[in-house]
Image (cartoon, rainbow, N blue to C red; front, side, top):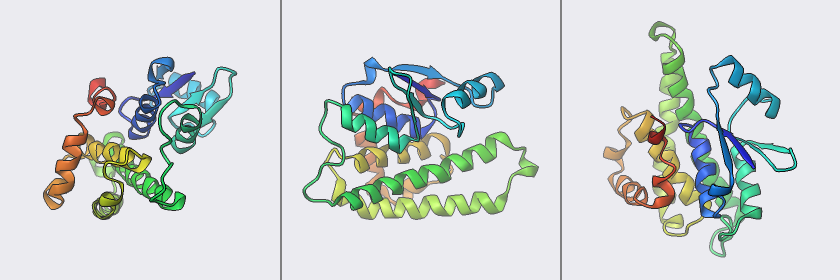
Amino acid sequence: MKLYHSQTSPFVRTVLVVLDHHCLLASVETVSLDLFCGGDRQQLLMKNPVGKIPALELDDGEVIFDSSVIVDYIDEIGHGAGLFDSKALSPHRLRTFYALSNGMMDAAVSSVMEVLQRSEELQSEKWLARWEESIMTSVRQISICLPQIRDTGLMPELSFVVALDYLNFRLPHIEWQAKYPKLAIWVKEQLKQDIYRKTDPRLAK
């Protein structure tokens, strides 16, 4: 299998974490793409017509895209415990928690791209403020949900860690840790695990 990716993407990191959970990380070839390079973008569009990463090319040439779909596929074929298998939490609740972290990452990535790709005078203060509001309300909700998924090893727990560490990495000015210190301590402890250390986006620098 081939994973088309950018190592700094939180959605890619989510997929890498799931691959590692299922003992498949070493068996996947990673193809790093610069989405702002014309040649790389054209290569990606041939695999994913939406032009987004990650995209997973299977051995038979079929391509799966959208991180949530890729996660489901890996969870089906993987060797580890099912990431949505829970007797305590319903499937729709697990999926909602997972959607919470993905939604927060959407807002965070949009904020990062606005700052990186637009000159300061063209940046939208309105949208940056709206995205930051979405991020902070999501962090608040994660802090509320955390007792239900802490130490479960389920998908929401993995995705919460990835999403919150992306804020640390790309949006350090959003000081969510000061407002939610217990959550910050939990994330710091989780990040000591190998599954997060080997997928740290800072390794791309």
